[in-house]
Length: 424
Length: 82
Image (cartoon, rainbow over all chains, first blue to last red; front, top):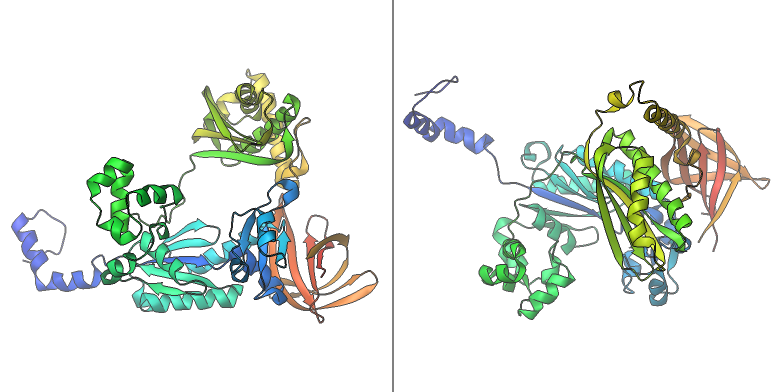
């Protein structure tokens, strides 16, 4: 029987058709193939961008860091020459200076520059596949399943991708190729810098077994300590450990640990932009503050920034969350859910102020303040609130609208509420 | 290390294949010939663009030039000092 058009067929007929030589050939050519995932990780991204601009810095220990005057005094990226001295991202700049006093420190560099280079990078990825999941500013997963006809085998595609990045951006990257995201990310980290590593299905056990557990993405120092107390140090030991004991020790994560140690990961490459669940901003303050008026001034600025973003993306939200970090680095959060969703900075500010009373009314010095709005829905109330009898709300809406237009034209810092602090 | 300058400068520019390429600029009474553009990027200031160029001269001296579309002005933003 030949099935040529849609219709109702008996199960036996369908089975016969699937087993027919025609279908076998079709399956071998077009049926879903084993996934091939690429993980691209730029080598010492920020430092490499700076080295490309200043060619005499190539090969030297270069450290890119935040501005200590804004109390962002940590290492954002270190060149490979700097890493030889033990300098790592996230380390305080003072420690980095102690480890390598003769390193070249580039402080407070332009974040827009890295975002611009990153957007170019993304453009190069899309020349190979539409299935791209940006993982951070300098990392992405690419699903290249079925791209062989266009670009040849995965390793050849990866080589072309690396060459293109080198030619167009002057930067090197490390690429991992594997049947899933977990292993692709691991592969890219095994041979840095400028590496190309392939983990095929038959080599998974051989490659994973001797590696330390922290080599896998998602297993951090805390988990490592607990695993170590169980006598587990390598992924091979974790893979063969009874899953029931892991479940008792780690709960749901126990099963996940068992799976990842065996190289199993079913998470797809998310090429779609995920809908936003919350919007927020936080700022480390130039100096610790305690006075209520100073705190209110920061909260008003943050409320204005969050509300502006909500309006820009046409969202309203109901839950307002305040985050406070004190000078001793202890952080606390408080939330309140309001009856009607909003994108008004005045309402967000009022709630934040109320939440702040409980958190920042003491004598503790505040180092960081953050504000976010969640439980987002699309703004469908603009019509309702612009009815003529809601005069007060309408007046505010008009003010917001004018402020938004001024910011659209002249930039975010061009206008702000009196009493709101400036972060520039 | 980088040193912030942020001084207005006069820049001679070539437009080629839809791209704006600074070729020389005058700073402190001196004309500096750009031998290589080592980096470029842009940012937004409202609806206007700010274009940045990292350039070097024949002595491999580094400069960062910035063009603000809103006011049509060039600035020397940074230089490299040993």
